[in-house]
Image (cartoon, rainbow, N blue to C red; front, top):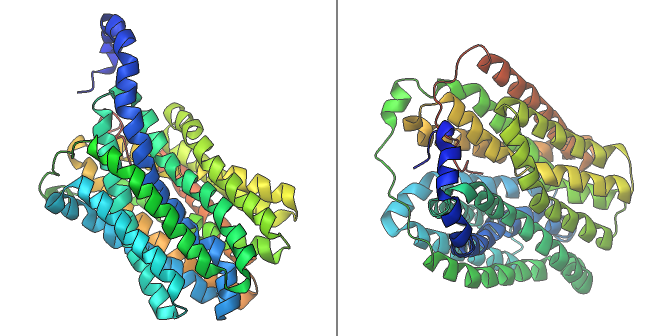
Length: 432
């Protein structure tokens, strides 16, 4: 149970001696399982979703795909993620959250491996959809388990979330070190080896996640339907923030889908692409706790606007100037910010909804995010084909993220005119 804010210092003083002796043991009990579960996030996001961008240029060249087809593949992945996110609660109830996490990883691993063996576009679409479904089961279930870990050490719940979310950066970083060398070794058809390499990495991660799953109990089963919350209109305060989240979902995935193709068109060598992708992944890991402090200090609407400004700046840096310096700056700025936005949405839900409607609110904005994520790559791909180049995909990202910035400023301006409906503590997690 979280104590009222005014009582925190009294409890800290009373428990100080006990905390000093038990903290190392408690840290080991929560940090090690959280690190293990972070490898599930690495598979779900870093390997099964984002690493596709590294394989996109050679697949386009070898298979003759246009940008619209390339974007459709990531759209299929996003649709699968949306379906998986909606189904995750039911799957967790039926089989247990720990089993759903492991099962989702197995599904993603099989889809990654199978992608190496078919040039058929329709089958590739299906495999990307299946990979997205498995990724959602893994990431959403893993988040619930990390929240359960937070019960053991409430004061470290933010750190645990940062460790878990940062797993996506680990996946990006490691895939950046693996895939480009495989492409260099195997030539134009190296994308086959790339998919196999990603599947092997994911399988190795599963071997590390299983012991972590054994150390975490399944969370309490979700409460029955929250349709009463929907009927009463209590979710209305999330309409505008949810629209901003939809725009963010469409904008960030447009950048992540086409930035490698743009850099390759701009003359980046394989080695430079490797460096860019590894810097991007390292920036995700480093940026989550940094932006977490910003989220703690600013009102949530302003913090989300600032995050989206940083994302726009990252896209501008990639487009405004050629060369390694601009590319690396884009990787640092964009990479540091994009995984912090879901945590910011948790702040919005906490401030605008009563605690009884929190789960329904997060589910609603997550659906909006996933819809945007499904739309972004296809839209950017079609425009890239018609206007001539992957750089158009980055322009689309800038426009969408810039519009999201304005929406979040409006969110905070509207919120300043009314008192928050709840003073409950912030939720620990917003689904990505």
